[in-house]
Image 1 (cartoon, rainbow over the protein chains, first blue to last red):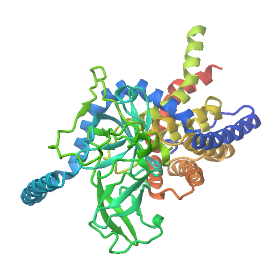
Image 2: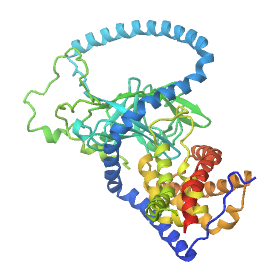
Image 3: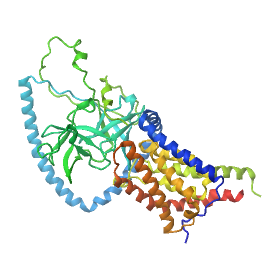
Length: 331
Length: 175
């Protein structure tokens, strides 16, 4: 039964079609290599397209996300009781750790005051809404509803409440694209917290990116990286702010991978307003005569700029230039 | 006797339908959500439309349209431009070469015919990505997306077949 079999139509000019196929094939390959070498041409078109479709994406996403949550939630229906018990146990443990953390925080604050330590700069952030996600065989990206008119710049780090998600690789006026840490072309400098060993987190489109420790000329040993070690971002290369939690090391055969803290993206993410500090020579003329450690100041709440879906964009505080953020591999 | 103006309008609309269906499928799979919670990559439904129309109405699915659909797929998915366009053109070339053989298939064999086109498109894309990034891309997501697409082919082919009979095919009879 030919229930989806077909009968061909008689094609006209078979030779011309075949030559067209060859021409289009060559054109497609040329575009692929041109796009790799001169990404800005296609990035501009992509940014314009996402700017135009952003309102529609926002409208379409809400009901679809509800449906997605419902479909995904079906699978967890039978494990709710077990998960609830697990969460209660975890909650009790976390309360204990919270006490420890508060006690340590107080102690560190006192030490900092005693030592006149330079306080860590509070990193401002832009809160943006996720309006699109792409889960394709070779691509893992996300579209946000904040663009250049909200102060978003190429190279900025994107994180959720748990950890680093990726970085901005393309900005439109009202939208921006995030290359996720799991994307095939993502390379991010990280550090193993316990050993302070530098490494590169290399995405390969799997849920857990690979931890490449061989770039610095060494190999992974239990002393440098062990399963369970926390991985943080570094400021190396001026690409990302240092100290943003990324994930924990897990062993995968002979390889080391990182189980990311940031899970599947929620509705909102933070775009970290990170500016590469100017080199000392550039600021020497404007530096005050007495360069010393300032007294510590109590921590301030992190200023954030929320990007609303209906309100006009809010003004953004002046930012430091981030020219150096594009030194790393870009699309 | 049918109104010649109405016939011309319907013929014009029908001639846009194959390309339009491919574009709509590209937009459908690039909706900003995954119903599998990100577990499976989105299928390449546009290839089903390209395969179908390249078999039954190659005059309405010329290579240039296939190139444009592939570029749109690349643009909307956020991937490097030209990668899936190359894959789609490769599948189109196979259909163009083997049109008589592929169109004679029915039932499960027709699905296998599409699976061959899908495999060729995926292989071309895989090879091009490997060359471009100078490292081997992961095979598993591509295999999953390919299998997912082949599984959905009968459903999409039924809908496209209905469109072919109702709109596009009717225009051919008028000629």
